[in-house]
Amino acid sequence: MIYRDELLFGATSAMHSFTCEPFHNLVHHGVIEDEGVSFKGHRAPEEQTSEFFSSADRWTRPVMTRTAPMAPFGWWICTAT
Image 1: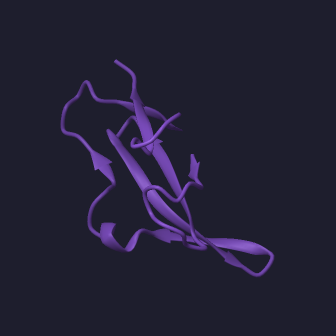
Image 2: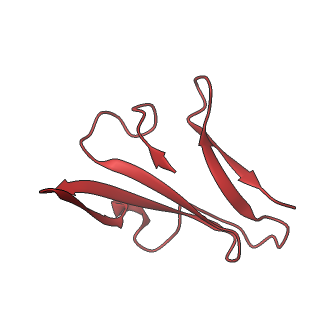
Image 3: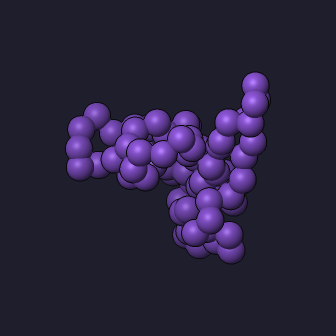
């Protein structure tokens, strides 16, 4: 999911992506920035040695992220059981 709202990260030119990895029980947070007519992506600076969300619980399988319909919640993580 590409997160485009300003609620969680403020007004910046960068876009934020969240990728679910149900096999590894994690959600990866990437930062996407304009680079000419294309884009470049990298890990979020505060998550160089960790993931945005990870769990050792075998029943946690993040499969989808969605923007929440109202404040104060920024977005939801859906898990499969």
